[in-house]
Length: 182
Image: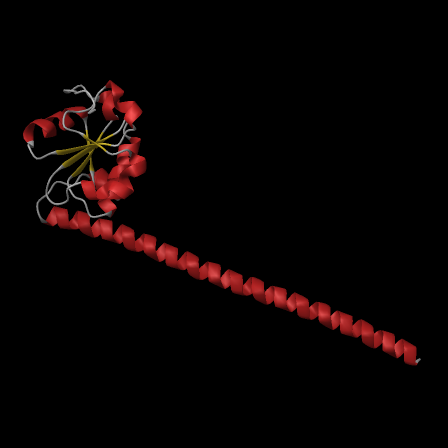
């Protein structure tokens, strides 16, 4: 009988130990879930704050008399899309236009827009200080328009204004071209 009681006590101890381990595992899982939920909430809050900042900047542009198109508001972007003709008009009408080519050096061998500054998209974050800030308009282009849109997004989040993404990129450009530097 004593042996049976001892075995039952040992079994009860094992069950209690297993329950303790399970409880610790559940506690850890609950703490991890709470940490993940806080992180997610913080990320959502940051995204909402960024979107609100974009809308504030767009509203400020409207209030100052600038033209903001519906797509800019609906897409939450701070740059405009420039057709190739609008890009040519910018080039002709703004002596201070900064032209930014975000293609790779290999892609520029067929030419660039005259006066373009070559900063490949992969180097843009490190070289953003080479781009003038302020009221100077900036025409950004790549080969087809997607990377230059990403460049416009990055630059707008860094506070740059007057950004124009060349629709269709260099492949749609029918304006003047020049050989790449070097």
